[in-house]
Structures are given as C-alpha cells and as structure tokens.
Image (cartoon, rainbow, N blue to C red; front, side, top):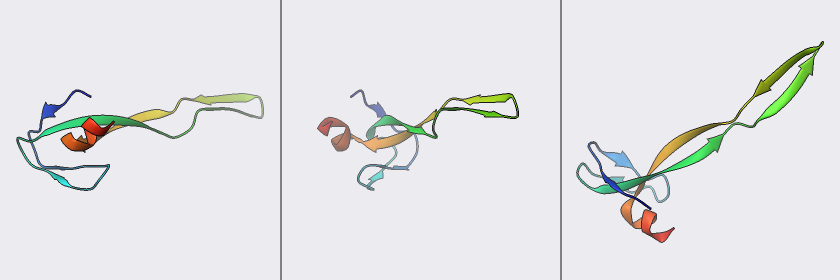
Amino acid sequence: MKTKQSRKQRTCDECGTSIEKGDQYAQRSRRLGESGLVSYDGTVKHWEPYYVRFPICGPCAEEG
C-alpha cells in the first residue's frame, strides 16, 4: 500500500497508535451507509453508499 508523510498528528484506525507529524501513513477507505431504492406513494428514492478515508500507520499498511 502506498504511504505518504503526515503533515499533522493522527490516530491509526486499525491499531489505535498515534501517527506523529512526519511519520509515514496510508489511507484506507470504508463504505458507510447502504445503497437502496425505496418507493413511497409512487415517489422513488435512490441513494448510493458513501466512502470515507481513515488513516492507518505504516506497519498496519505493510501487513495488508
């Protein structure tokens, strides 16, 4: 996984360790929400899931 240098302090979403400014980190995206299609009184509501990026530390990024 490609890593980059952190410009601010972050917390690893996988293991909870602190990522200090200048350390290498990666980002992993996760899907939040569900997609769906619902009809109420003839009105169709269609929505897509959205993705959010979470920071992970260098060792967690190397593991997989």
